[in-house]
Length: 452
Ligand SMILES: Nc1nc2c(ncn2[C@@H]2O[C@H](COP(=O)(O)OP(=O)(O)O)[C@@H](O)[C@H]2O)c(=O)[nH]1
Ligand SMILES: [Mg+2]
Image 1 (spheres, rainbow, N blue to C red):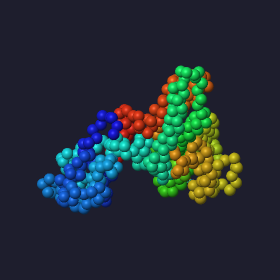
Image 2 (cartoon, rainbow, N blue to C red):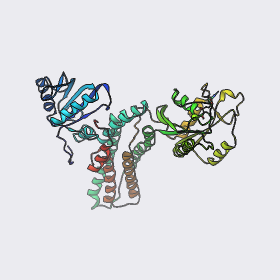
Image 3 (cartoon, rainbow, N blue to C red):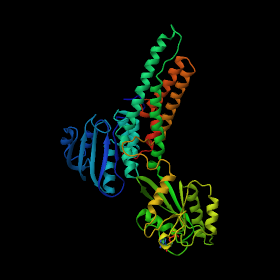
Image 4 (tube, rainbow, N blue to C red):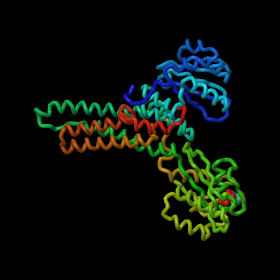
């Protein structure tokens, strides 16, 4: 157990499933004596008290005065073989909101306190069940927006990042050992440091690959914001619906139908894309539409990729030209000519798409992918980091190793070089949580869901 000021033995409980009516719900508890505390509200207390770990018990949950609250199934885990490392009774009950409130209320009367966000995972970390990269992955798995993002997070949960960090650490430790031997002899001899540069290179290269993977990780985590812009009737809402494969946005030949922006998440080869349909850009005296256009412009300014749609039947007119000239230097811009099905002869320099027939859609997807560096990278099995905290620490370790290299080349005193090696080790230790502070933990776990 780490030496940190957390009360990890008191009894906590929380709903681990969403606060909404559902067939079933799960209430987690954890803490020394939790099984005993739950047994006081169970119709078969003896069964729970005598239960060995990893066993399931059916019965009623009831108040201390014997009023039945729900028919439940309770899974008992005994320390240390549970996810938190502590004794745990997990209650599967019916997902009725009033019922859940009564059960949680009863547990609170029985000595449990509501868990803080991420408190179960914090306990797992403090009890040595998870390192910090895996603790972070717990939340990343829960929040993943696409199947690919979930697979990558699952990979981290299984310890892929932690393993790599530990491999790098052991190589640096070898270097430290070598340095120490040389330090011991340094007084008798003139200090010329011999450090195997190959090992240094190897470790640096591995850490750099991990650090660079953050770009991909961030895309999977946050998604890419893609805005559809263009004049009224250019076909934005139709293309929006084609991306979604459903009729979400109202399509009409009446100008100015979409007066506000709409958004939806779609998956583009596993990358979460936040797609935004905007109000058509035009001069209008309608106050509501003006406000919609103002908001749409904000979305256009803040997006990662800007799809500007030109009505393919009409071609580029003066308004389109003004917009395109204004965005001539905008690297986010992709110009799309729409309604390809209505245009038999199509100028080859443009990207043509038909929302009606789907013609050109795969070319549009390819163009989108090109605009987003890191998109399409990262398959299950490649370690991809998703945490800015981890990236910053990796960069600190890389910087320290760089110092080591320069130090050796400039014949800096051995103990200075040893300090840089130690700094690299400390940075890597912080990634996995071997070295940590309450500050870091509080910040990390406060962003978790309650019940995790
Ligand atoms: N034939 C054809 N008509 C389209 C296509 N895309 C949009 N339209 C029509 O163009 C009109 C305007 O489309 P809409 O998506 O509402 O445009 P928005 O104002 O830019 O959102 C509607 O009548 C659509 O049916 C297309 O690819 N082919
Ligand atoms: Mg529209």
